[in-house]
Image (cartoon, rainbow, N blue to C red):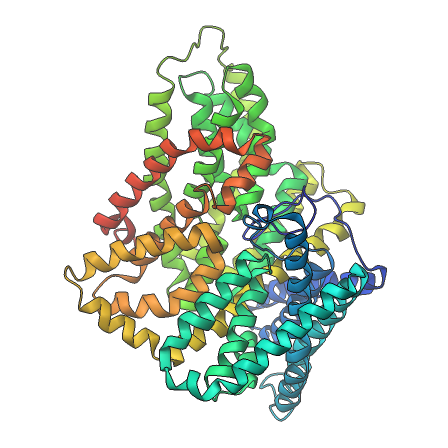
Length: 624
């Protein structure tokens, strides 16, 4: 799975890509890039001003949330369009190379054409939605809500234009015409069959939200558009619900005030990468642990634990740690495939460390306390860290340390002094959110300000030429993430309204074993979905359905959250499909088939940790 068509594109869902400027297909999109970067800055400044006014002047800005919300939805929709422009929407590409080359090209052209049809179908509905919102006035600013809702038709329109241009520029007219004719024929047949389809009730769910979405995923259609196409087909051919509802759900899924922290934490990861604050933490750990057996493995795992607590992104974590550690580990005899396998497992472990974007999204869609998730996530990550460290020590039992020089106290002291400003950041984030002092959104903006100032004063700052690309990269990445959330929210609404959640609750509560059986089934489900969908879409799709069932069975929200997030992250790193596994191979510079043989013991250690977490709820709830 990857985010771009180019062979060297890195996946960025829940993470931060390389800061190198990606290929931009359309020069006329430059004003959109600048506008979206400006909107991100406006959003951050507004939230910071609100925090400052509330805590220092004891006078919150009443209009602050509305301004930030308007800037956020416009930034998200522009970002989704930029992701289309840059070919950065996440898609599954495991199966396409298995097809014969001519058939692969047919599938790719048909997929692009189908996305264009989807966007053109949604555009007038989104415009109607924005018009309807003009009758609603915002409470603080007193302006029509169409100012905000107009972001949806603007973003969908931009994506439609970009996709249509992309299809036209293939110049494969025969394939385009045949694809459109086939789509029209299928749509006509489904329309004629609508009475029969409506008569089969919830059997439409596996047809449209299972089979159709699954086929589109296999065909390499970007995940956000797979969800949207499946939902559109379900609403059109199997229900009497208007498509208008779908736009409302996409809006709701993308614009929760909690989600404002997603692009800000993504930007934080970019700042850490650009300033070298993450590398300072790695050097600090290496100076204290590098001389013992498995010491560099401890440093690798500990670095992922601490760096993740700052950036909240797996890709940024691995991209920061690997260049700093791998050369020294290779000098000590560690093989690149072994290091890469260990890094992949460490990244899976670290995704529960706050400020994990997955935890923020989970708290938003499932109605779970983010402060509670942050507190529990830290201790759950420690359980997994211990499991991986024990395995690393056992594997290093024959390691030759005779030529390893222990760092002097002077070197260690200098590394500690350099790392202290960076080390403050994860504890500040956890303390402020966990202590209820500020929300995750507010803390994210404070963390960005702190990292920016500390980076300038203590770590050399960020070159001016990199600032705008960094902001645009953040917006494009965030837009891709948020569009998946919006489309998955619409799909989850379809599942809920169909009565699927009620039927699932009836089925699960009828199984022998009660809560234990449900937890085991959840582990299997999220392991599989973690392989195929990655964290965020899996969470958004199933959390609204699974969490009410878990509550009905008496399972604590935080305990259940830690189970499913851990299972999902293990699936993410599990070959041969797990998307994170291939990211780790790319960052580590190792061949996937060589890493595959070495990653299984680490995944087994994580599974042992997961079993402990599932069996002992106190690991998740004792410190709440």
